[in-house]
Amino acid sequence: MLFIHCELYPMEGPVISDGWIETKGPRIEKIGEMPAPSGCGRVVDCKGAKVYPGFVDAHTHLGMWEDALTFEGDDGNEETDPVTPQLRAIDAVNPRDRCFTDALEAGITTVVTGPGSANPIGGQMAALKTYGDCIDEMIVKAPLAIKMALGENPKTVYHGKDRTPSTRMATAALIREELFKAQRYLSDLKRSEKDEDVDPPEFDIKSEALIPALQRKIQVHFHAHRADDIFTAIRIAEEFHLDYVIIHGTEGYEIAKALRKKKARILSGPFFTDRSKPELHDQTPANPGILEKFGVPTAIVTDHPVIPLQYLTMCAGLAMREGMSREGALRAITLTPAEICGISDRVGSLLPGKDADLVFFFGDPLSGYEKPAAVVAGGKIIFEHFNENSDSEQ
Image (cartoon, rainbow, N blue to C red; front, side, top):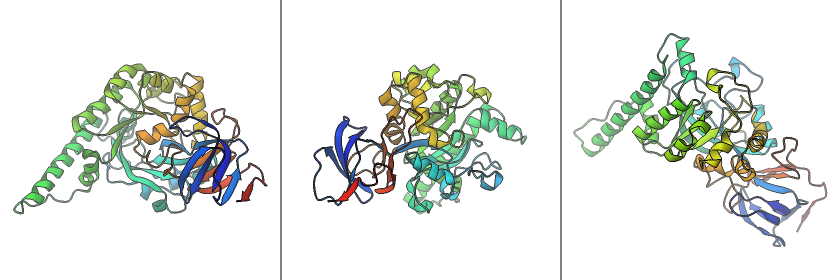
């Protein structure tokens, strides 16, 4: 398909005020300035609509806490064991959850979803498309990361069960212990492979799940709100040379200079909510803008279902209102989360070879009162409202 007369926001490169974008199958083929090439099959006149890459929400629990259900659809936290790195998000996500449709209709075409923060080590997160019926066909990357959690949430859950961890010390100690075990397990595996007289260690699925993180093949996403918990996450990550990302980073603005020095990356949010627990005492929607000013890579996330993910653009608009640059706010829901999560080869910008996920607006997507005029996902038009007679055969 060829979309013509559109204002392109590639996110990598300058805005093209009157441009065209060609898709071929599920990929972007070419983009450029008008006039458009001929002989491209179906042509859609976008009537001057703005075109952005499909939005990316880099931290959600989509499909793991299902819409309009309670325990029946609650598959996000395995609260029977504080250390569960072997659990996989893709085994819990229900792609038929109505919220996938809500996301897609809002122009959100890629999400990272995974376990909650009840456990110090919760399981494996996955990057998924928001379109499709079979989870295996929706995967962008799985596993993407191991979810770990510090601070109030693990303490609260296991204090109520009269089990470890009930302190921040124990939470960090459990994480370290499991990482040390995995290191030793990996060392023993390598020794057995080199020396036939050495038996391999007894199979340990938890260590097996952590090996890719120790090898930096996948990330570790640390749930951390308070500044001290953020520093604990960084300390553990540096001890084990992990490729880490801080989720939430609520007090990040208070330690922004240190975060820049540590080259930390933040998935900021949800901040479009009340201060519902002690760790959120200093929450502010100015956080992303302050982090941006200090040069800390920052994406904006909803933590769905905490904030319904169809309001991702409203969150970005609020961040802009509170000091984030417009360009930074747009990048925070497109290219920046893709780069932070290591999936920018597929999504986050309008470049040839990337996934043909496009979202069209006639107004301002960050305003809070505009809906997409059209959404293209995987090279297919999900819906469009340009004009019933705007497309033709060329």
